[in-house]
Length: 86
Image (cartoon, rainbow, N blue to C red; front, top):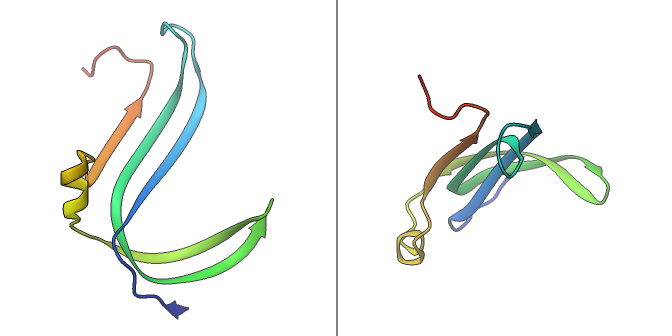
């Protein structure tokens, strides 16, 4: 593993599933996690379709730029077929 000092970076992880048929307009099941991270180390594992597949270690970080831009440092958004949680 290579040690990589890094500045805070905005990262977004998105997982998308099938369509929710009862929502207008139709939407997909999904989960999205937005966060600000500082890489501590990373390792390139493989490559697929021209993209590197990596394994990394990172810590969450405070970034005043997010506040100034109106972007949350942490946000988790889940889209499902329920109109409200029980």
